[in-house]
Amino acid sequence: MVREEVKLMLDNFKDKMIQIKHPKQLGLPELIAIALGGMIGGGIFTVLGISVSMIGVYTPLAFILGGLLAIMAAYSYIKLGVYYKDEGATYSFFKRTFPNSPFWASLIGWGVIFGYISTLALYAYTFASYAISSFPFADDEWIRKAVAGAIILLFTLINLWSVKGMGKIEDLMVYTKLIILTIIAFVLMSHSNTSLPILLENNDDIHIISILIVASLTFVAFEGFQLVINAVNEMENPEKNIPKAIYSAMFLAILIYVILSLGAILAIPFEDIVQNQEYALAAGANKVLGHWGTDLVIMGALLATSSAISGTLFGSSRQVSVIAEDGYFPKFLAKRKNNIPIYAIISMAILAFCLILAGNLKVILEFGSVTFLLVSFLMAFANFTIYKKTNSSLCLTIGAMIGLAIGIILIIYYEATTQIEQLYFIGGLYLLLTLGAWIFSLTHSKK
Image 1 (tube, helix red, strand yellow):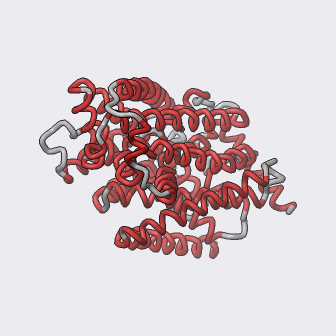
Image 2 (cartoon, helix red, strand yellow; image 1 turned 180 degrees about the horizontal axis):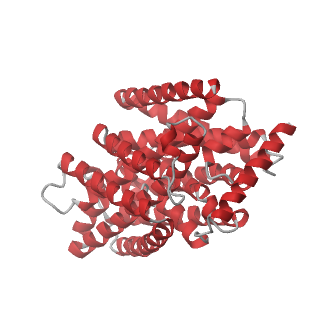
Image 3 (tube, rainbow, N blue to C red; image 1 turned 45 degrees about the vertical axis):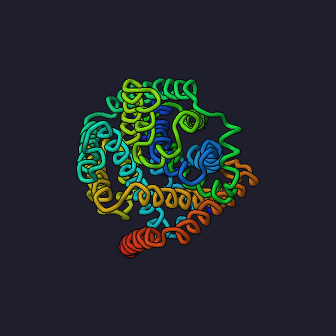
């Protein structure tokens, strides 16, 4: 126990030296922007069509339930983030809580990073779908994948350029998209073709299990809140700004998801949303609002997904660098220039594009949801183990573990009963990740 406390003190001292060497460049507005950038972009534009096809009018309720589950998960992240103040975030929290478990430290590191890679692919795929939605080749899969690769390349270059530059661009994109998305939501509501009572009457055969499954799938839409902690070495006053940034961003994300999905189901026929799942809002807005409405939706989608790509690359690349420094990833990924992990950023971008080439929207979404539910469960378990040190509520921590476990079981049940081939694909990815984590944990143990 004494050794662990001494190690924690030394790690905190090292973090303070890093902070002195690299001046603070990110205030609360930038941190909220990073969190919102990671969340809004993988949410309404990605899962709306899939959600409506499964539960129809209950889509806004699924976003509320998914958001509440994400808030429960965020509680442990915030407590651990304030306690450890480590930019390695998820990986470092688990490693430092369980210092004698190299395999599990390696496995959670591999899991969370490939979860981020899947969300990068998800956001880029959605960006491309909306970017080409007005062209005759809107349904051409290879053009869509090429555009997705191009947008990943663009934000890779931006992240390699400057932390402060990235932060200011993120501010501009995020707060502009919030205004646009709010306008879209209220314009859709004002063009409502039906009412909630009528929709509820026509969807009275939806089972509660289906709503809970979709709520679990929407969890990936809220995973961006963790990215705030990855910027701990570049933020001002982490004790106050970590919880403020995360809770503020999550409240705004839930609010926007609910009003936007509500506007969509009231104004756009369900068949149009389901038929054009990859760019549901743009296709529906064209019929309801005309050309200008479509342009507004596309602009909002492009801003949302762009900021999500940028924020995810920024935060997760720092985590890759920390994991590589510990020997659980190839060592070259730890190298930095001006505190920017250049090789980590480039490697994540390449792997995200590979996943785009190999998969489709739904399988990427489901892999990301399961991964982040599982990782968040492990974070809640880590917080449960040291809840007295982090000054956490035992009831909230245990409640989060139960909710996250149920979410994982529901997605696996859905996959097993409806599309077993996708479950095999996801299972194969997890086998590869486990093998990689095991190999690097053996190397680490020998050292």
